[in-house]
Length: 380
Image (cartoon, rainbow, N blue to C red; front, side, top):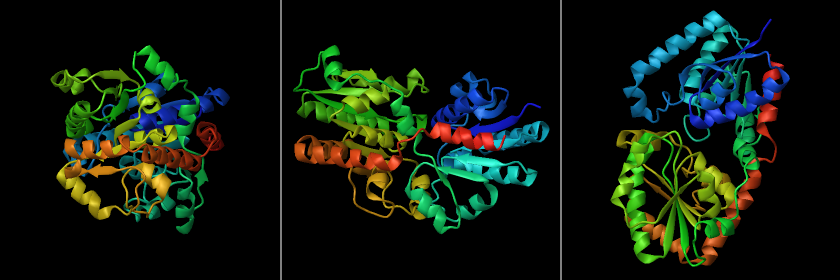
Protein backbone atom coordinates (compact mmCIF):
# COMPACT_ATOMS: atom_id res chain seq x y z
CA UNK A 1 0.00 0.00 0.00
CA UNK A 2 1.28 3.50 -0.89
CA UNK A 3 2.42 5.47 2.13
CA UNK A 4 1.13 9.04 2.57
CA UNK A 5 2.99 11.97 4.10
CA UNK A 6 1.30 15.24 4.99
CA UNK A 7 3.62 18.25 4.84
CA UNK A 8 3.01 21.80 6.04
CA UNK A 9 5.61 24.39 5.06
CA UNK A 10 4.02 27.84 5.22
CA UNK A 11 6.99 29.99 4.18
CA UNK A 12 9.47 30.14 1.31
CA UNK A 13 12.34 28.98 3.54
CA UNK A 14 10.23 26.15 4.94
CA UNK A 15 9.35 25.04 1.41
CA UNK A 16 13.05 24.90 0.60
CA UNK A 17 14.00 22.94 3.72
CA UNK A 18 11.08 20.53 3.34
CA UNK A 19 11.83 19.95 -0.34
CA UNK A 20 15.48 19.15 0.34
CA UNK A 21 14.50 16.48 2.87
CA UNK A 22 11.69 15.03 0.78
CA UNK A 23 13.93 14.86 -2.29
CA UNK A 24 16.28 12.66 -0.28
CA UNK A 25 13.33 10.61 0.99
CA UNK A 26 11.91 10.03 -2.49
CA UNK A 27 15.23 8.66 -3.73
CA UNK A 28 14.76 5.79 -1.27
CA UNK A 29 10.95 5.63 -1.29
CA UNK A 30 9.67 6.99 -4.63
CA UNK A 31 6.22 5.50 -4.00
CA UNK A 32 5.35 7.89 -1.16
CA UNK A 33 2.49 10.30 -1.84
CA UNK A 34 3.04 13.85 -0.54
CA UNK A 35 0.22 16.34 0.06
CA UNK A 36 -0.42 19.47 2.12
CA UNK A 37 0.82 23.08 2.02
CA UNK A 38 4.05 24.26 0.42
CA UNK A 39 5.61 26.16 -2.45
CA UNK A 40 7.27 25.77 -5.83
CA UNK A 41 10.00 23.39 -4.67
CA UNK A 42 7.59 20.91 -3.11
CA UNK A 43 5.28 21.18 -6.11
CA UNK A 44 8.20 20.35 -8.40
CA UNK A 45 8.67 17.10 -6.45
CA UNK A 46 5.09 16.09 -7.14
CA UNK A 47 3.51 17.23 -3.88
CA UNK A 48 -0.25 17.84 -4.12
CA UNK A 49 -0.68 21.30 -2.58
CA UNK A 50 -3.91 22.63 -1.13
CA UNK A 51 -2.44 26.09 -0.49
CA UNK A 52 0.73 27.85 -1.64
CA UNK A 53 3.28 29.53 0.61
CA UNK A 54 2.48 32.82 -1.14
CA UNK A 55 -1.00 32.68 0.35
CA UNK A 56 0.38 31.85 3.80
CA UNK A 57 2.85 34.74 4.07
CA UNK A 58 1.35 36.25 7.21
CA UNK A 59 3.50 37.74 9.94
CA UNK A 60 2.88 39.35 13.32
CA UNK A 61 0.06 39.19 15.83
CA UNK A 62 -2.00 41.88 14.14
CA UNK A 63 -1.64 40.42 10.65
CA UNK A 64 -2.85 37.04 11.94
CA UNK A 65 -5.98 38.72 13.30
CA UNK A 66 -6.59 40.47 9.97
CA UNK A 67 -6.43 37.14 8.15
CA UNK A 68 -8.37 35.17 10.76
CA UNK A 69 -11.19 34.19 8.39
CA UNK A 70 -8.76 32.94 5.76
CA UNK A 71 -6.73 30.98 8.31
CA UNK A 72 -9.86 29.38 9.74
CA UNK A 73 -10.76 28.20 6.25
CA UNK A 74 -7.28 26.78 5.73
CA UNK A 75 -7.44 24.90 9.03
CA UNK A 76 -10.92 23.58 8.32
CA UNK A 77 -10.01 22.32 4.85
CA UNK A 78 -6.69 20.81 5.95
CA UNK A 79 -8.35 18.92 8.80
CA UNK A 80 -11.00 17.60 6.43
CA UNK A 81 -8.35 16.41 3.95
CA UNK A 82 -6.34 14.73 6.71
CA UNK A 83 -9.37 12.87 8.02
CA UNK A 84 -10.15 11.70 4.48
CA UNK A 85 -6.61 10.78 3.41
CA UNK A 86 -5.37 9.41 6.77
CA UNK A 87 -1.64 10.09 6.24
CA UNK A 88 0.90 7.78 7.85
CA UNK A 89 2.84 10.74 9.28
CA UNK A 90 2.82 14.54 9.38
CA UNK A 91 5.95 16.51 8.49
CA UNK A 92 5.67 20.04 9.92
CA UNK A 93 8.35 22.56 9.01
CA UNK A 94 8.89 25.76 11.00
CA UNK A 95 5.80 28.08 10.80
CA UNK A 96 5.01 27.45 14.50
CA UNK A 97 1.80 29.46 14.84
CA UNK A 98 -0.16 27.08 12.62
CA UNK A 99 2.03 24.01 12.91
CA UNK A 100 1.81 23.69 16.70
CA UNK A 101 -1.96 23.93 16.45
CA UNK A 102 -1.99 21.23 13.78
CA UNK A 103 0.35 19.04 15.84
CA UNK A 104 -2.30 18.80 18.55
CA UNK A 105 -4.86 17.78 15.93
CA UNK A 106 -2.61 15.05 14.54
CA UNK A 107 -1.90 13.72 18.03
CA UNK A 108 -5.61 13.25 18.67
CA UNK A 109 -5.86 11.25 15.44
CA UNK A 110 -2.88 9.10 16.39
CA UNK A 111 -0.79 10.34 13.44
CA UNK A 112 2.95 10.67 14.23
CA UNK A 113 4.26 14.26 14.06
CA UNK A 114 7.80 14.99 12.88
CA UNK A 115 8.67 18.66 13.40
CA UNK A 116 11.66 20.20 11.60
CA UNK A 117 13.11 23.59 12.61
CA UNK A 118 12.13 23.93 16.24
CA UNK A 119 9.78 26.74 17.27
CA UNK A 120 11.91 29.44 18.90
CA UNK A 121 10.36 28.94 22.32
CA UNK A 122 13.73 29.86 23.81
CA UNK A 123 13.10 33.36 22.48
CA UNK A 124 9.51 33.81 23.63
CA UNK A 125 6.44 31.97 24.94
CA UNK A 126 8.52 29.31 26.66
CA UNK A 127 5.39 27.67 28.05
CA UNK A 128 4.79 26.21 24.58
CA UNK A 129 7.43 23.61 25.48
CA UNK A 130 4.67 21.70 27.28
CA UNK A 131 2.62 21.47 24.08
CA UNK A 132 5.69 20.46 22.09
CA UNK A 133 6.48 17.67 24.56
CA UNK A 134 2.88 16.47 24.41
CA UNK A 135 2.10 16.72 20.69
CA UNK A 136 5.35 16.15 18.79
CA UNK A 137 6.81 12.68 18.34
CA UNK A 138 10.15 13.76 16.89
CA UNK A 139 11.67 17.25 17.09
CA UNK A 140 14.65 18.18 14.93
CA UNK A 141 16.57 21.28 15.97
CA UNK A 142 19.00 23.34 13.90
CA UNK A 143 21.01 25.16 16.60
CA UNK A 144 23.31 23.35 19.00
CA UNK A 145 22.18 25.41 22.01
CA UNK A 146 18.61 24.18 21.49
CA UNK A 147 19.66 20.68 22.59
CA UNK A 148 20.48 21.87 26.12
CA UNK A 149 17.34 24.02 26.24
CA UNK A 150 15.02 21.09 25.50
CA UNK A 151 16.92 18.73 27.77
CA UNK A 152 16.28 21.11 30.64
CA UNK A 153 12.60 20.64 29.86
CA UNK A 154 12.82 16.87 29.86
CA UNK A 155 12.98 16.32 26.10
CA UNK A 156 15.43 14.54 23.85
CA UNK A 157 15.80 16.12 20.42
CA UNK A 158 17.77 15.49 17.24
CA UNK A 159 20.36 18.14 16.35
CA UNK A 160 20.54 17.88 12.57
CA UNK A 161 22.49 21.05 11.80
CA UNK A 162 21.28 24.19 10.10
CA UNK A 163 19.94 23.88 6.52
CA UNK A 164 21.65 27.15 5.61
CA UNK A 165 25.01 25.37 5.79
CA UNK A 166 23.75 22.74 3.38
CA UNK A 167 22.31 25.32 1.00
CA UNK A 168 25.60 27.17 0.87
CA UNK A 169 27.51 23.97 0.17
CA UNK A 170 25.49 23.51 -3.03
CA UNK A 171 26.14 26.88 -4.62
CA UNK A 172 29.09 28.29 -6.49
CA UNK A 173 29.59 32.04 -6.41
CA UNK A 174 32.38 33.85 -8.28
CA UNK A 175 34.96 35.58 -6.11
CA UNK A 176 34.65 39.23 -5.21
CA UNK A 177 37.54 40.01 -7.55
CA UNK A 178 35.67 38.41 -10.45
CA UNK A 179 32.44 40.21 -9.48
CA UNK A 180 34.19 43.58 -9.43
CA UNK A 181 35.93 42.95 -12.74
CA UNK A 182 32.72 41.73 -14.41
CA UNK A 183 30.84 44.83 -13.28
CA UNK A 184 33.68 47.30 -13.84
CA UNK A 185 34.01 48.23 -10.17
CA UNK A 186 37.40 49.51 -8.99
CA UNK A 187 39.05 48.46 -5.75
CA UNK A 188 38.51 51.89 -4.21
CA UNK A 189 34.73 51.65 -4.49
CA UNK A 190 32.75 50.42 -1.50
CA UNK A 191 30.13 47.73 -2.07
CA UNK A 192 27.17 48.01 0.29
CA UNK A 193 24.46 45.38 0.29
CA UNK A 194 20.74 45.99 0.77
CA UNK A 195 18.57 43.01 1.76
CA UNK A 196 15.11 44.41 2.55
CA UNK A 197 13.37 41.05 3.16
CA UNK A 198 11.11 38.57 1.41
CA UNK A 199 7.71 39.80 2.60
CA UNK A 200 5.67 42.74 1.35
CA UNK A 201 5.22 43.99 4.92
CA UNK A 202 8.98 44.11 5.44
CA UNK A 203 9.57 46.16 2.32
CA UNK A 204 6.74 48.52 3.22
CA UNK A 205 8.27 49.15 6.65
CA UNK A 206 11.98 49.20 5.82
CA UNK A 207 12.94 49.64 2.19
CA UNK A 208 12.55 53.42 1.98
CA UNK A 209 14.70 53.94 5.08
CA UNK A 210 17.36 51.73 3.52
CA UNK A 211 17.32 53.77 0.32
CA UNK A 212 17.42 57.07 2.21
CA UNK A 213 20.44 55.75 4.12
CA UNK A 214 21.97 54.73 0.79
CA UNK A 215 21.49 58.29 -0.42
CA UNK A 216 23.42 59.59 2.61
CA UNK A 217 26.18 57.02 2.14
CA UNK A 218 26.38 57.89 -1.55
CA UNK A 219 27.11 61.51 -0.63
CA UNK A 220 30.08 60.49 1.53
CA UNK A 221 31.64 57.46 -0.16
CA UNK A 222 32.36 56.19 -3.64
CA UNK A 223 29.89 53.35 -3.47
CA UNK A 224 27.88 50.82 -5.47
CA UNK A 225 24.85 49.26 -3.82
CA UNK A 226 24.02 45.58 -4.26
CA UNK A 227 20.31 44.90 -4.00
CA UNK A 228 19.07 41.41 -3.25
CA UNK A 229 15.50 41.08 -4.44
CA UNK A 230 13.45 38.18 -3.14
CA UNK A 231 12.19 36.28 -6.22
CA UNK A 232 8.73 35.78 -4.69
CA UNK A 233 8.03 39.53 -4.57
CA UNK A 234 6.41 41.30 -7.55
CA UNK A 235 7.97 44.20 -9.41
CA UNK A 236 5.59 46.69 -7.82
CA UNK A 237 7.28 46.23 -4.43
CA UNK A 238 10.40 47.86 -5.85
CA UNK A 239 8.74 50.76 -7.63
CA UNK A 240 10.29 53.35 -5.30
CA UNK A 241 13.71 52.66 -6.82
CA UNK A 242 12.80 55.15 -9.56
CA UNK A 243 12.95 57.90 -6.91
CA UNK A 244 16.69 57.33 -6.41
CA UNK A 245 18.25 57.74 -9.87
CA UNK A 246 21.53 59.02 -8.41
CA UNK A 247 22.29 55.68 -6.74
CA UNK A 248 24.39 53.10 -8.57
CA UNK A 249 22.51 49.85 -7.88
CA UNK A 250 23.26 46.35 -9.10
CA UNK A 251 20.51 43.80 -8.62
CA UNK A 252 21.78 40.33 -7.83
CA UNK A 253 21.03 37.29 -5.70
CA UNK A 254 21.08 37.53 -1.92
CA UNK A 255 24.14 35.27 -1.79
CA UNK A 256 25.99 37.50 -4.26
CA UNK A 257 25.18 40.43 -1.98
CA UNK A 258 26.64 38.58 1.00
CA UNK A 259 29.70 37.36 -0.89
CA UNK A 260 30.72 40.75 -2.26
CA UNK A 261 29.58 43.42 0.19
CA UNK A 262 31.96 45.34 2.43
CA UNK A 263 28.89 45.94 4.58
CA UNK A 264 25.24 44.94 4.34
CA UNK A 265 22.01 46.36 5.73
CA UNK A 266 19.75 43.37 6.36
CA UNK A 267 16.20 42.86 7.56
CA UNK A 268 16.21 40.58 10.60
CA UNK A 269 15.51 36.95 9.75
CA UNK A 270 17.26 33.97 8.21
CA UNK A 271 19.24 36.32 5.95
CA UNK A 272 21.30 37.47 8.94
CA UNK A 273 22.29 33.85 9.58
CA UNK A 274 23.24 33.36 5.93
CA UNK A 275 25.28 36.56 6.08
CA UNK A 276 26.99 35.21 9.22
CA UNK A 277 28.20 32.23 7.15
CA UNK A 278 29.80 34.66 4.69
CA UNK A 279 31.32 36.72 7.50
CA UNK A 280 29.92 39.95 6.06
CA UNK A 281 29.71 42.90 8.51
CA UNK A 282 26.09 43.91 8.77
CA UNK A 283 23.55 46.22 10.31
CA UNK A 284 20.35 44.41 11.21
CA UNK A 285 17.09 46.35 11.00
CA UNK A 286 13.55 45.45 11.90
CA UNK A 287 10.26 47.28 12.17
CA UNK A 288 6.73 46.00 12.55
CA UNK A 289 3.38 47.44 13.56
CA UNK A 290 3.43 49.26 16.88
CA UNK A 291 1.03 46.83 18.53
CA UNK A 292 2.98 43.84 17.21
CA UNK A 293 6.16 45.31 18.63
CA UNK A 294 4.70 46.06 22.04
CA UNK A 295 3.39 42.51 22.33
CA UNK A 296 6.66 40.99 21.16
CA UNK A 297 8.74 43.12 23.51
CA UNK A 298 6.74 41.91 26.50
CA UNK A 299 7.02 38.22 25.68
CA UNK A 300 10.58 38.10 24.29
CA UNK A 301 13.12 36.30 26.47
CA UNK A 302 16.29 37.00 24.45
CA UNK A 303 18.39 40.14 24.57
CA UNK A 304 18.99 40.43 20.83
CA UNK A 305 16.69 40.02 17.86
CA UNK A 306 19.09 38.95 15.11
CA UNK A 307 20.17 35.34 14.71
CA UNK A 308 23.68 36.60 13.93
CA UNK A 309 23.99 38.00 17.45
CA UNK A 310 22.14 35.12 19.14
CA UNK A 311 24.39 32.48 17.57
CA UNK A 312 27.61 34.41 18.10
CA UNK A 313 26.89 35.80 21.59
CA UNK A 314 24.37 33.42 23.15
CA UNK A 315 20.73 33.66 24.16
CA UNK A 316 21.01 35.90 27.20
CA UNK A 317 23.95 38.12 26.26
CA UNK A 318 23.10 41.76 25.61
CA UNK A 319 26.42 42.25 23.81
CA UNK A 320 26.14 42.79 20.08
CA UNK A 321 28.66 41.72 17.48
CA UNK A 322 26.60 43.42 14.78
CA UNK A 323 24.47 46.55 15.38
CA UNK A 324 20.69 46.19 15.58
CA UNK A 325 18.19 48.96 14.89
CA UNK A 326 14.58 48.34 15.87
CA UNK A 327 11.31 50.18 15.36
CA UNK A 328 11.72 53.96 15.74
CA UNK A 329 15.50 53.61 15.53
CA UNK A 330 15.19 52.37 11.96
CA UNK A 331 15.92 55.76 10.44
CA UNK A 332 18.18 56.63 7.55
CA UNK A 333 20.40 58.80 9.77
CA UNK A 334 20.89 55.98 12.27
CA UNK A 335 21.70 53.45 9.56
CA UNK A 336 24.17 55.92 8.04
CA UNK A 337 25.80 56.50 11.42
CA UNK A 338 26.24 52.78 12.16
CA UNK A 339 27.43 52.04 8.63
CA UNK A 340 30.00 54.84 8.63
CA UNK A 341 31.40 53.67 11.97
CA UNK A 342 32.14 50.25 10.45
CA UNK A 343 33.30 51.45 7.04
CA UNK A 344 35.72 53.96 8.60
CA UNK A 345 37.24 51.44 11.02
CA UNK A 346 39.00 48.55 9.22
CA UNK A 347 39.92 46.89 12.52
CA UNK A 348 36.30 46.82 13.65
CA UNK A 349 35.15 45.48 10.29
CA UNK A 350 37.77 42.73 10.43
CA UNK A 351 36.77 41.88 14.01
CA UNK A 352 33.13 41.48 12.99
CA UNK A 353 34.10 39.21 10.11
CA UNK A 354 36.25 37.08 12.38
CA UNK A 355 33.54 36.78 15.03
CA UNK A 356 30.86 35.81 12.52
CA UNK A 357 32.98 33.16 10.82
CA UNK A 358 33.92 31.69 14.21
CA UNK A 359 30.22 31.41 15.07
CA UNK A 360 29.51 29.48 11.88
CA UNK A 361 30.89 26.31 13.49
CA UNK A 362 27.88 26.27 15.83
CA UNK A 363 25.58 25.61 12.89
CA UNK A 364 26.98 22.14 12.19
CA UNK A 365 28.78 20.79 9.17
CA UNK A 366 26.50 17.96 8.08
CA UNK A 367 23.72 17.63 5.56
CA UNK A 368 20.48 18.09 7.53
CA UNK A 369 18.26 16.93 4.67
CA UNK A 370 19.78 13.44 4.73
CA UNK A 371 19.28 13.17 8.50
CA UNK A 372 15.72 14.46 8.28
CA UNK A 373 14.92 12.08 5.41
CA UNK A 374 16.22 9.17 7.45
CA UNK A 375 13.96 10.10 10.37
CA UNK A 376 10.95 10.48 8.08
CA UNK A 377 11.63 7.04 6.63
CA UNK A 378 11.52 5.54 10.14
CA UNK A 379 7.89 6.67 10.44
CA UNK A 380 6.90 5.48 6.97
